[in-house]
Length: 150
Image (cartoon, rainbow, N blue to C red; front, side):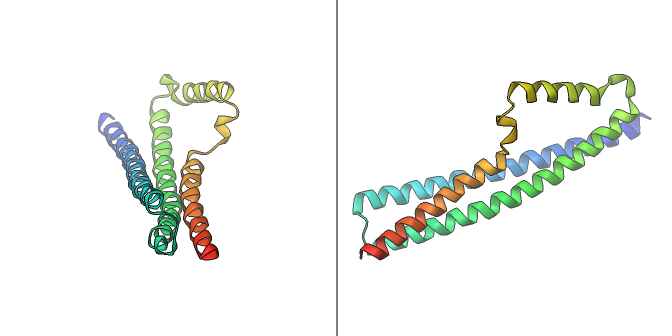
């Protein structure tokens, strides 16, 4: 019995670690993109918005779009690992019904839902996608401005 539960716990822990790793990758990518874009905007602010700055604004747009697609993929991977962990947690809860794992988690979730009813509806991955979308839109907008006013 202990061996089976050790296997389930090990698999559950592995899925949770994979989820954390994916989130860390998303955070790292977002940090890199944000720093590169900030440096590009600083360069534009210093040099002025002229046609030669398209070498900054167009890659800014591409980086933003890449960030959007990468965040979507990171969300997919997180959803996979969380789903796997949830299934394993339910198997563990079946092995130990006296612990009331699922009812306790549902009670905590209900309490959280009541405390933050509006924020619970906003998906975190959408916030990250919006950030990268703004970066892409800024790059596109600045590029269009340069082309139109040139």
